[in-house]
Image (cartoon, rainbow over the protein chains, first blue to last red):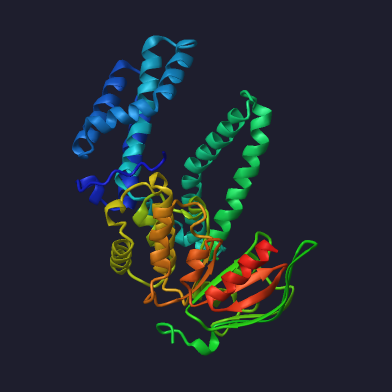
Length: 198
Length: 236
């Protein structure tokens, strides 16, 4: 489920979305630019652990996030160990994992609506060039929310096929999945229209 | 009067024909509807959903005119969208934002209301629909009934003059269906209701009913009489 927001009242939750996003971006960039060494792995890990602790989200949430990206960690480490030494592989992976986990702090502590408001404000100057910030923000919201819906639709299609005795076959899965996805897109479009979206 | 709605200009269709591809979905329909709660019944493919979509501005008439509370559905769709809210049968397709409170607040995006005002309106609406405890929950993790209540909440918070509900209880069990129906059919709802339904018990609770068949209105009047006509047509 992609709803990452965790209700809370800590300082990170209370911080305005725009400055918070900028602050996290700066920290992520700083970690990314550190040289490849064991020190970098240590710094990236320490900063991430501290960030989760001081934000009030805690080590439990950090563990949950690590579990969610376990395959990214596995593939990143394994892929790099094929071509690089252990120190480089661990250092690079630590930077990537720290960047993902720190970026997650933003969505864990900020409601999507507040993120969209901040995004709209940032895009406001583009209005004079014909860009409609509210439409772009809406597109992002719909994109974020469509991921779990598509996952559920995919599960439904697979279950329906299994119920009729069909095995795992990509070709027989893709066509019905596309059909139900397009039907969902149609229905969502009408629902948006009905809720006053132009 | 229905709340603050001017009944002299409710739903008016004059000589409306709607073609969907080669199919005539509505065939020369003329209707003037001023009742507060209108049930629309009929078999699948009878034209009742097309009728609701025309009134809601989602489909255009091929011939004739559709007026909703004085607004021409073909000429002023922006005003029509402000006047009308629609609830569909599939609650999953109506969720736009990740959490319950955010999804309800989404309906007020683009209004002139301040953040504090929107938050207050959302809190009131969630309370009215019994969703306060679920405000920060993922909208996708709700039960079917809760999702439909959320969709209804998101529709009603816009304070529409007309609420269209197209088979809103189709996906729900009896208990959830009753909860949604109680909100929909509340006598002091403050808006006109156009309820498209296969649930004849719901239709019976409305003030008037229409029976569609083959794209035409074949019966109109007191719900009990129209339902009796529908049952008779099923036996024929």
